Length: 167
Image (cartoon, rainbow, N blue to C red):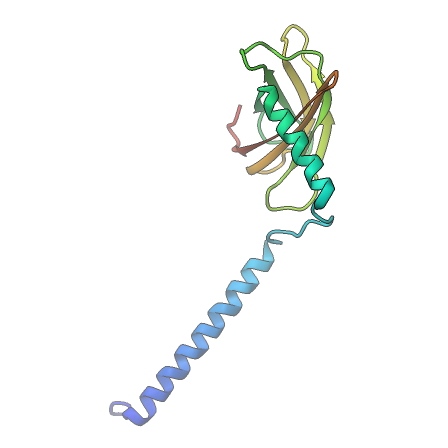
């Protein structure tokens, strides 16, 4: 058997490239759908007056000068919630006490809230609060904190990359 004549080789080569590129595209789409991928938020985004009210609340919250540190205790292997300590400090580093509020747990790539819990103060540690939330995978997690002290409202979302050894 001799070499393939050019009149058969080049059309066959082009056909092979087309089949390969279509197959690669289909394989990529199937792989993207297998992990559920990013989800679309089920509710409508804030618009108009609602958006402006929300932005005003965020701006007022930023003016408070409070800061937050989020310390998850790791990843739950048994389906139980994970303890997360939240440390709140004021602009001068003083602890923020007497807060009421909650923390909502979200994943950046998933729609909706995956868990939430009320802030509970830790005895003997002013400005430290504890929540229990279902962190069951490594990766990026958003902790959306909504806390109130009197008429002061604090809104903040802290993003953490959770790894098994995180403490």
